[in-house]
Length: 154
View 1: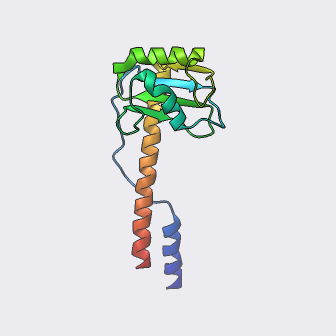
View 2 (view 1 turned 120 degrees about the horizontal axis):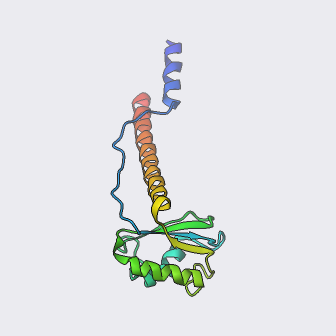
View 3 (view 1 turned 90 degrees about the horizontal axis):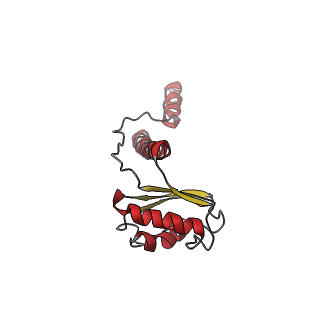
């Protein structure tokens, strides 16, 4: 009997294999700006959004602007993503202003800014979709793990 209990406990600590519907996206071209040379000390998503929203003609409201900032605090690179390709001219203007220093992020000039195209753009989207699926898988595994722990403790 004790052996069975210890086997049950081992299983509770093992990762749970879950099946989930993978996320897929039909993405539009010319919607992503890659940034390099961001300040690892001062930069955050808010400072990127604040610096870029006016030129792009979008609000700074995270939920309604259609501007997504892919950035992790402490990094020197990041990406801006718009929900569709309707702002290509504004994106080109923003890239030029970021590169010439007339638009600063967190008070500093970026090293480079460019609109992703071709293989670079495909790689960005592939990695982004992979990130979303990994996050979804992790959440499903946590749910399954919690459900299993509740059953075994009850």
